[in-house]
Image 1 (tube, rainbow, N blue to C red):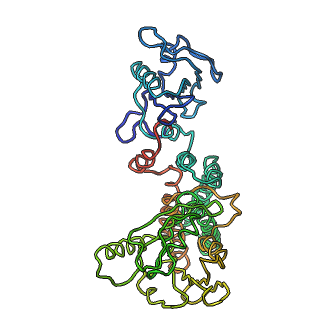
Image 2: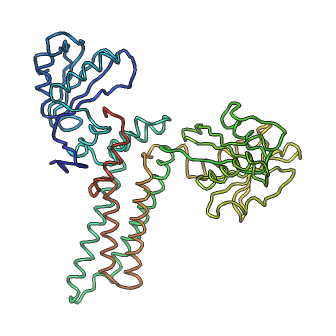
Length: 454
């Protein structure tokens, strides 16, 4: 059964079509058609309905019988197709003009142009995919590392969804137990005081926490970690950017204030994408250009996942630490230890982590690279990591908070009614991940981020 007939006021029962291959010229171009009139379009386009799931060579004709192109047709009858509807794929030559001519012919035969992500949206509406799996389709296409591809595949295969559904089932059972105890409050046995619910809630919190940890790692594989290089002029920020990027991305001189603008580099660290941002040196300045660079630096610092505060080991002034956002994840990096003949080191202090290194000689850089992975819970053992998005993390956090509140309601207030409501909120938060409970507005935003033809 379809989840809905309409989404965002658009009819989802008509036939849609789109070019499914990237723009430009190529050896092969594909047009995808989905909907109940796909078989009729096939008959009018090349005179027959192809044998299901067999590649059929055809000549694609215009309204006057002239051949537009020739190629392969594939037919997937409903419901055993990607969208759950009749699907027809036309594989011809990949020229931009010939594909446009063929698409216009298909639209003239009754199809309409598909919206971005509409094929996958229909797969979701027809219960071929849940929402987390549908999002993983877009994440697979956009993957920039081998590990993110593997993780997106796991989400597409339902690894993430299966774990969420197990949590929802556990919450359902707990709600039934708690609400039954409320209904039979006059019985001699108090079902809420035997400790069974509390024990299960504690176990549930631990399970949610484990999934949160894996999801955070999956979010990093998808979005990458944003690292801002901050510090005084000539502390080594641009040198570190060049070292991490592996090429001369930034100009490095002995003149203080060389960097006046924000420089960005995207790199991979053992399969984890990193967004490295080099910023202007932080200091008081009367130069309006440098002032603007410092303003932009402060702006990036407030948005960073992690801040590397570069400090000259010859002048170990940590005064800038007090000017950074209080909740920031800051690592102090003491550079130029080669000038002091000091060994590289990594230490944990009350104020966080400090690393002593030399960017020039590369001494201690391995400590920094390992620290970047460890500080975000990333490791190379990612066989069980699924891809995740920020909204998934938010939903898991809301569910964890609601279950924690429910536990407190039982342990402290003995309030079964309030605990039951908190469990309902937790269940609803988790259901938003798979799409069992999702607003049309959220669906619209998710599928509009897909490419056309998918």
